[in-house]
Length: 101
Image 1 (tube, rainbow, N blue to C red):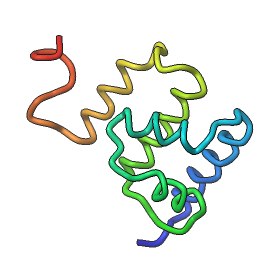
Image 2 (image 1 turned 180 degrees about the horizontal axis):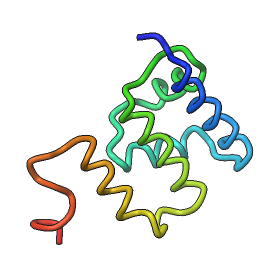
Image 3 (image 1 turned 120 degrees about the vertical axis):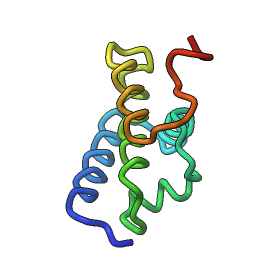
């Protein structure tokens, strides 16, 4: 898969934000994997260097992970983010309500 223009913009944003806030790859990957990301740290690094493309959902998780590392995980938008994730990848057992309530 080749990287398109929108994905390049996301990579550029994340790279600048990582540098500005002095977030390490380890911190980004830890936040990303905590949100359910399935890539390994070297794959995230390859993506940030423009060596591979990612599915849109993984890009969204990386951006959310960076926001969480930068702002802290308990933000006002946490519930809205969770609903957004669920809408992208519907699961027979939702993360809100039911068993998790």
